[in-house]
Image 1 (cartoon, protein in one colour):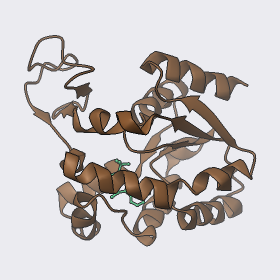
Image 2: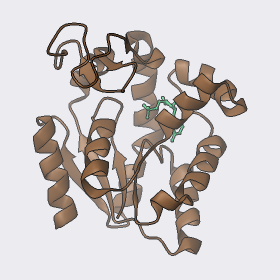
Image 3: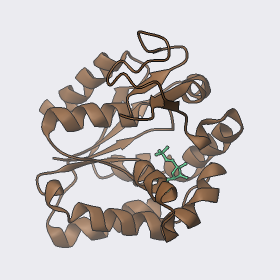
Length: 215
Ligand code: AMP
């Protein structure tokens, strides 16, 4: 199964991709996670991407297309993958089509998570993760059960993304509206676009996605 999860920052793509990935045994390919790992490791790509990401802008198509082209040829992608945060421009979507065609791979669904734009800033600026195991939390919506202690691994260290600051969120939402939203008609025209309600409770969103996949 080959899926794309589409939606603005804060729509819940990462959370849902992680769940569906575990349920179906296919990897979640998040260009954001891969770029953050490259920044942390100080690789040449990371050095190029760092300032762009901190400004809430999009990294060049060339860089992200290269990352995905390498990734989908790895063995764990043989029976499928979930693209989370890629493609983000029409040029990236066209590059993806060019990648899949010679490999005889077809996209099954592009799942759009629809959200109320007014809710996004609060969703994004409140989120934080366990620095050790990556479990996700939120200041308002999902605090750890014991304050300051990760529910999953017991670690007491947490981190926040550098680009989840209020100052950067506007630029990220703007990039979505101007550069990524044109992908909706692109995939609608190909008959693969499906919508789920990204404002519903987390389990309900998962149920809706499963409904699409089982249809
Ligand atoms: P995300 O974790 O998906 O919110 O991505 C975080 C940041 O990484 C974005 O704001 C961009 O700067 C960069 N990024 C991730 N995926 C892409 C992509 N497909 N194209 C361009 N930039 C990307």
